[in-house]
Image (cartoon, rainbow, N blue to C red; front, side, top):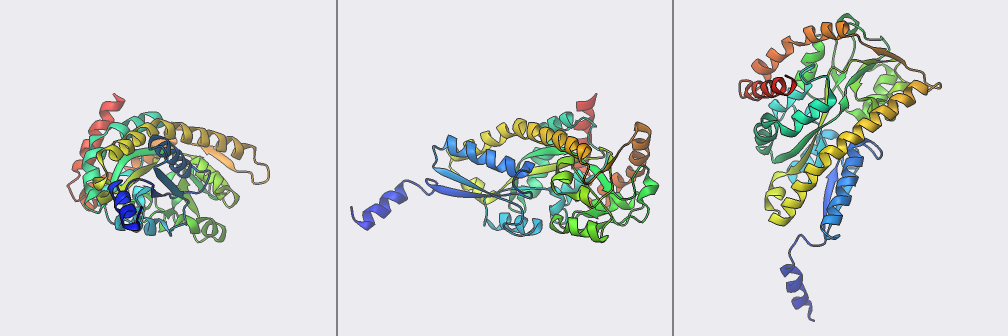
Length: 333
């Protein structure tokens, strides 16, 4: 067969055969997002009989969180797990996930809302698609906790505390409401920042706190459950729309399947790492579990931030927030 004939044959087989999709994450090997990407890759390979290879990338492999967002928008990568907090200056409505005590205390109920919410899966998705990002799903990596050397038990403990946040005006407003001095910082700089006192506190799910070794440079962890760490499985919009119907169906099906899988994965990791933290004698951590009365004080202090979101952040007069609030109320009645 001539080279020309071979080229024509390969072209006729379609660009999707024997192709590779890059999948970037904001975490490293072993952590929830990266494990998600690996499981996703295995399922896609199985369903396409190896025609498609999905290559997961650890955090840092393609730059910072902001760099990764740009790579997805530009089509340099096809898929990404990203946190809405790092897109907060671009998609204003995505800052909704920074509101404290918005979602139910039950992580399982929160995941059900993330699965079914029209406000998120339709309305918010459309806002992201204006920037060439399509969120295919939203999922929790577990309840958020606070670490510090102060031992946070009441809003007054935040007074003047240099609290690390993502690049989100709403996150800053959330901690200013407690009296803290929030500072935006990439997580790649967070350990050093905590160690040197550049920042004095941070929030994350338990698995991430322990696996990233933040407990080594923080004396206490407060079990506050003030929020959930919500991640999005996203794709480049143009790439996704150009997929064949067959491949698009495979992607959608796999994303839907992964919702239950990742819930179990984050639950297992958060439970296992809490046990490890409790048993760690080399770097002992004081674990403070807030009472409902203590949490109520934080909840009350956080409520005005919702007005800030609706009046100062939202570009749709709080329409997505209002719809989501109705969905949350319906799910918890």
